[in-house]
Every structure is written in C-alpha cells, then in structure tokens.
Amino acid sequence: MTLADSVGLSDAHERLAVRLLQLGLAGLAVYGLVTHQFGMAANGLFSLAVTLVPALLRREYGYTMDVGLVLWIAVAIVLHVVGSIGLYQQFSWYDEITHTVSATVVAGAGYAGFRAFEMHDSELDVPSTFRSVFIVVFVLAFGVAWEVFEFGAVEIARAMGFDSPVTVYGIDDIVTDFVFNAVGAVLVALWGTEYTSGVIGFLRGRLAAHGDE
Image (cartoon, rainbow, N blue to C red; front, side, top):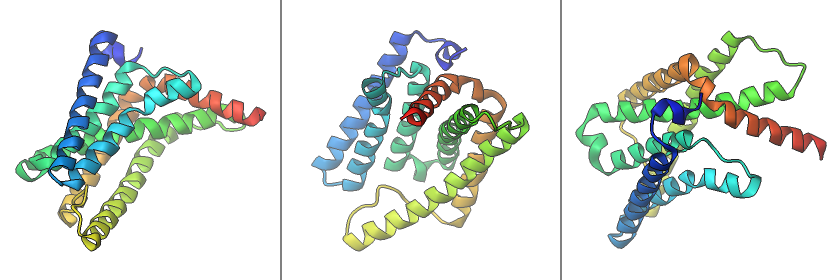
C-alpha cells in the first residue's frame, strides 16, 4: 500500500495540493524579496527547492515518487515556513506539530537509505528491532545537527546584518523539539516504514548501478 492510497485522495487532487503549496512558497519568497525581509525570502526559496527534488529525480533518473510522499514532504515544509512568519511565537503547540511532522519525513528518509543499503549488501542481516532503534537514533542525530545549524545561521545573519531564516528560542524549546522529534520517529518506526518501499527500491537500484560502474 502506498501513502497515496492511505490518504484517500486521487493522484490528481494530491498533485493539485502540492502545486498549491509550491505556489504559496513561491509567493512567500517573492513577498520577502519585495519587502526586504530576506530571511523570509530565503526560507521560501529553499523550501520551494526542496519540494522540487521529486521532479528532479523523475527527470534525471526516471523515478516517479509516490504522490502521497511528495505531498507529505510539501506539507512538512509549508508548516515550518508558515510557522516562521509568526505562528511559532503565537502558539506554542504549533512548533510541536511541525517538529513531529518534519521528524516523520526525516525518519522515512533515514530508514529508506538504511534499508536500501542493507538490501544491497547480502552480508548484512539486521533485526527488525534494530531498524526501529536506528530510525529514532537517526532522527535525534539529525535534530542535533539541525540545532547547530540554526545557531550558526542566527549568528552569521546577525554578524552580516540580515534577518535569519531560522530562530533560536532557548534551551527549553530545544528540549521540547527533541521530544517531538522522537515522537515523529516512533510513529514512522511503528506504522510508516511500509510507505517508503518505492524510495527503497530506487535507492537500491542506484547502489547497484553505482557498484556496476
């Protein structure tokens, strides 16, 4: 079963939703440039670029990602960008939602990469329990790297006199972020790994092609 099947929307409706989200990100980037809010513009442009990665994979490698996964990625990105323009400050629970959803995307990507490598190497035989542990550890490690990136981005932007595309709210916020990162990771470990089968197949194929070169 694909994620698109679970969502219950047709491919056409899901593609329309993705396009609308991308249009919103593009509009946000333009608005940021026009109003000289360069942090907002950078957020919009970078986020838009990430949502275009599935299209790049289709063009370069002929791999068509499940439209449900594309929508999943786009929603996670848009939630973050919308939060950065005010919702994070107004509603404490909004940050918890965005981190949970974003963590599920990171968890899915990490699991797909790990599982593809495992299937590619016949000498590897990893217990399913370890795979679940790996997902959680991978997401938490990514969370550490993200927090370091946020701190660095804020300091660099401050030194250059620009608005930072990200904000650091303090230790309490970081701890809360990690808690909900873990929640997202556990959700994928328990119920979400089956939706990454298409990505796993693609990555496994790329590993095989690279090994034959």
